[in-house]
Every structure is written in structure tokens, then in C-alpha cells.
Length: 488
Image 1 (cartoon, rainbow, N blue to C red):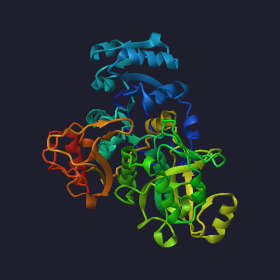
Image 2: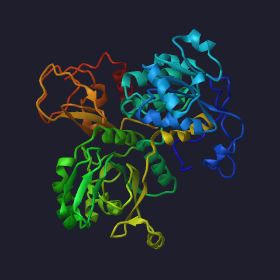
Image 3: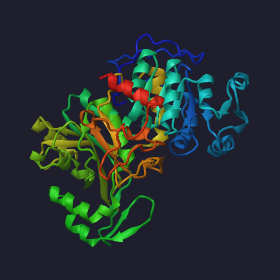
Image 4: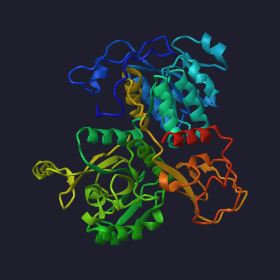
């Protein structure tokens, strides 16, 4: 396994939420950490999983994978629509004769040991004897409350809701450490995958100048026909033969020309900035710019682009997080929303050898790009759960609010406007997200605490929504955010 997070916990207590005792595995042979350690355990231990927000999207992919994982079983799913949840479980292939809907603690206590429980109230999930709580709602109030309560009981928490971690991750990591529990981001989503890659590079002593990911959708160009398609699901195809002129990378002017051609398809995506917020808070790396760079680039070009300006790249500083749009030919593989690190090549002879193996290096041979061209959503997440439940790996007590996700008005917003998170990318109509270094955030209001907030004043186009523009004082999640700021 590529090294992640923190060392295996010492003298870990038995999980208070289950009769099963989970002591850390003693790692031999130089503290070896690949997945074969888990496969060789053979102790009969299982993660007992509870999922909040599980029937669609990410949660569905996790539900579909759990039955394939020998050391894991589904114990409970929280859904406001039990009938829909039952239909999903049946579609996947679960034994629906074992499924039971429970409305309170008494019914849960009466459920069979091997039952799959469905509850409507998320507070009941932690009453079902689980070792692992997976939170997928994207609702900051629900997920923060559920995570805090579970961690204080010694139940491990695996956070899919990046919106919540962007606001409360500092505190949740600390609470986990204080209660001998695990709080972890999950493999299958870009932040954890990128943190794995980053920590691998740091372990090897590589100098990492930038870390990042590709945005969700590719630009695919057919050289023979000149047709270009943005794979956002719209199916729209535009004939763009002029892309040929800018197909080969010749410096920053190439990026400017591509941006001009494709400008109507590009945007600042709140989900991208949120994910980089999470990585920033763990690594200490700062945003490359408030709206990130978003160059339209091929994988082979990354080591020429995400490098300092003095070396021909786009970075005004190093130690940054960033995002790009993947451009590829019709017959080329996708980056799949994957993750990358850019490292400095310090030993020329060594990197000459590595370049001969086909690794992506800059034209000046000073930098290399190392990347994972994937994130497999819930299909990967069992790895994080098993590493946390059986090995105690995942918590980042070093997490601090290094960057703050804020929102800038993209038009004049009147007093009384109600802000609302919606859509696939969890955007807020009227606001463009920006990722700020904490020192520059001043009194900017956290983006994902603005859901349902009412503007107390007019906010002019181009201005950020500040804490004085809304009243967040009644939100427990805001109190957690402030507490996190106080930690340094």
C-alpha cells in the first residue's frame, strides 16, 4: 500500500461500539504496509459498516462493493426512503430477507446479529453495533453531528462529505485522536488518493512543488474530423479544426490559446476547490491562486505547466494545490479525474534513467509528474475502512485550516437573498467559489456554511460574502469551524 496518514496506533482500545475487539496488527519486516497485510490477517475480524446517505452516487458504488470484501459487512443504512433503499439493496444483490426497517433503539436491539438494518434517523446508525460510519450526505449539519457523536463513542468515521471536512475537518481529526478513534477521508475520492500520493512522495524524500488533480470532465478532440467534445454528459460536439494549431504545447501562449477556444465550456467548479481545500489543510500547501489555474492540458504536459514561471511554467510560487482540465485525443486514455504531484529532479543521471522508462518529465528535465489516472469512488473506499478499522490508519491530527473556501458574488445580490447549495457540483447560485489562504481570507464566510443563509446586506458583484453579510452564529458547524481556527 502507498503510505498514508499516520502511524499505526499503539495500545488501541477495543471498539466500544462492538463486541469485536480490534487491536492493531503488529507489522513486521520493516513495518511493511501493503494490502497483503490485511489479506493475510485471517483472524475473522470484520468491519461492520453503517452508511448515511447511501442509495445514490458515491454511496451506491460503496454498497455495490461491500459484498465483495471478505473482511467487511453491511450492518445499517440510513435513508429517508426505506422502500427506495430496499430496492437498491435488492438490485445490487443483497439478501433482502435479512433486511429489516427499525424505527427506534428497541427495534434495533431486537434485530438479528446478521440483519441489515435500515433506519430513517441518522442518530440511530451508531446504535447498531458498527465499527465504521461512512458519511455521504454532503449535508454539513448532519454529517458533522453524526461524525462528532460517533467519534466520541470510539466509532471510526470515514468522511465522504468533503463539504463538511472543508469546514470541520480540523476539529474532527482532533476529536478522533482524543477518543482513540479514526477519522479519515476515503480512497475513491480525489483528496485521499492525492494525500496518499503526496505522502508517498514525502516518504521518499522527493521535493514536491505542486499537487493537484484533473477536473471531472475531459475535452476530447478528434484530429481526423476536427470534432471536439466536452464530456459533461450533454453530448454536444463542436467542430474545431483550429485546435490543431494549439495541439502541441509551446509554452504559456498555448494555454492562453486553448482557453480562448474553449472558454465557454470552462468554469470554476466548487467541488474541485473544495477537494483542494481538504488537501491544503492536511499538507500545508496553499492555493496557487484564489480560483486555481485550470489550464487545459494533456497529461504529457503537466511537468512543463505546474512549475515555476522562471522555468517556463505557470506557478508564481511552489508548495501549491491546483487543478487542470484534461485534454486528450479520441484514442487516448483519460486521466479519469485522477491526481498528480510535480517533483523536482535533483539527480540528473537517475532521472535520465527514469525518463527512458517513459515517465513524464519537463522539457528542461528539471521536473517530473507522477500521477494516479483514477479515482474509483466507493469501489476503493473499503480499503480506507479496513486500514482504519483493522490498522488504525487514517487520522490527521496535524490538519489545520490552511485555506478557506469562500464565495464571491458573480452578480449583484440583494439583501434578503437566500443562498442555497444545489446541483451535481454542490454549487451556490450567484456565487463563484474561491480558495483563499487563511491569512488572506479575513472575514470571508465559509462557502458550505452559506446553505440556507439569508443576506443581511447587499453584496456587489465581485465581492465575497463575509461573516457580517450573514448570520451563522446559530450553526453548530460554524462553532466547530471557529474552534478549528483557534487551533492554529
